[in-house]
Image (cartoon, rainbow, N blue to C red; front, side, top):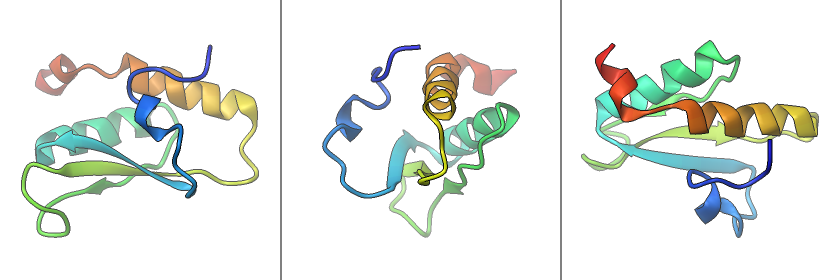
Length: 88
């Protein structure tokens, strides 16, 4: 898989290992966290009251021990998540 993609395009200038992916609603952030977990990634949902309503997100933490293949799998998992999957 190639690096980049819509979900991470805005993250290219981030210099911290913690990358927030804003999902919007609490339900959307939980659905994304569950989707990533089903692909083997722990990315917790951060919801109100921790963040403002409408800005719920998942928090991805990159680590030095991740291989390029791990990052590619993460990008693929993010790309494969669709809002419609929340209604399953």
